[in-house]
Image 1 (spheres, one colour):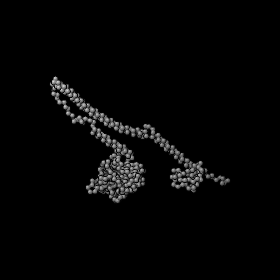
Image 2 (spheres, one colour):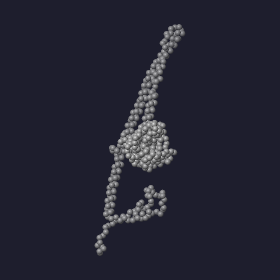
Image 3 (cartoon, helix red, strand yellow):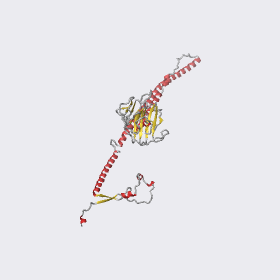
Image 4 (cartoon, helix red, strand yellow):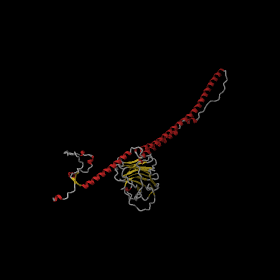
Length: 427
């Protein structure tokens, strides 16, 4: 009885946790599983679950009433949070298509259509203006030609009349019946100005050339539009710039100075090579920026890993002369692209004077491309495709990428490079 009078222990609940991947109707199979029998989810496990762990995970777990109540409260809270999140997602899904929302998909489509409709209206007006000009030129030319034609027709009639009179007089003179009176001369000289009465061919050809150039510029701007969607605001890291590079207050303008700035040397600063890096690393997605190099006679722009050497002047510190950097450079009037101390010439034929360089980085695809931002002509592309020159390139980027810039110091009578600026494409 004494044992019965002892206090009964608190109620306990036994919960059996089945092993991972177990289903109620699962039956053991003696058949050996081959690699192709595993699903993609199963293949992601680093190692198969051992029998010992499976037996251990299938053993009952004892939870007290208090622990079970707490677990139930956590599950109820998780259910409430999940329901609220689902409601938020459904609302966002509805907002994508509901009309009247300022940022709905339909409103965005409408705004884009309005912009293109505006451009089409401008093009239609210009097209009609060109057609009207040709028609007006045709009418004016036709009027002038009609007057000349009428004048010569009258002259022809007069000549024909004179011929008739002359023939009649000749017949009468042969019979001795009449005297012939001498008629004044009826010769009409051709006017040299008449040759110029024609459609304005020269003006027409100039119009075609202008329209061709406008079409090329429009195509370039539409192509550039896709890049501008990936625009990234780039600023210079003053802690990395060489002491002969003066960085503007906005962090976009750089100027080469003959005299180094009086400042202590910094750990991440280039001390010998006149380089500077961007302040923000790019480790994912697409990025596009442009650099105005029109006021610089010798320069290099590109991208590099942050591990590029900053001290000294060996190849490890120079853009494109190592495996950590890629560059496009203009030196002694020659344009070339560099990587891993190999280069390829980028002829400027058809590009004219290069004023702005567009740089497109696609980090996940390992692609870095340089463009003439004036006409969006591709100058050089570094990508996974192997080339005879850059056959040792590795183009799955393994580290964050920094925009990079370099001034080449003048030698002898060379024109001093002075100024580069990162373009503000959103202004």
